[in-house]
Image (cartoon, rainbow, N blue to C red; front, side):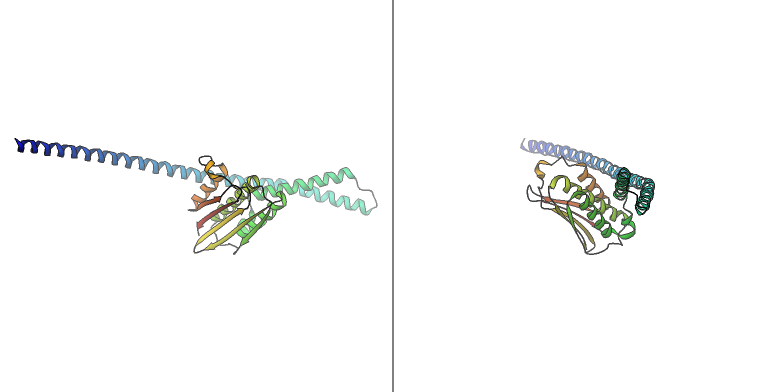
Length: 255
């Protein structure tokens, strides 16, 4: 009787163990399938992000070329009117104030077109390297916004792949725009350096800072775009910030 009970108990244990193993195998198969689906979805999202960023840059390049082309007539017209004004003044004629005002407006329009074209697609990035492109942008940014930007760079970085250079340039642009919008400062700094095969970009300010605990799940499109650009070149973006203690954004990527 005892042997029969023990045998029955053993059979029950074996059955329960087999059922548990089947459940574990089924759960593992479901998890494996879910992982495959997520991996596939992430690859599709990554590919889509890459195409969107590429299309965005192609659109910027096209608009920049068209804008620069349309800006040339304004420059020529402005120069022609300036020459006419000089000739009239040399003949002793009084300057025509409405025409002078018109010429001044043309000068502003021409400069605005050049700045817009440069922001959309900086040719200097291609021909002079990342360091020179950032130096020019920081200077123009300071002139336009009143935020003085100090650039520290230990190289010209002519040897960077074009996609890496463009990513670092765009992230610097977006980061400085965030400084302008949120930091409430008159100074910021940009540092570009390379160490042990890693390229680092740091944009920092001593301004208002951000409370990241209140920003979780509410990241702006600018930061999302920066992180996506970084991911496409196998880079990462880190942000250190506290309210009233400034913000430091660091982009790093292998080169």
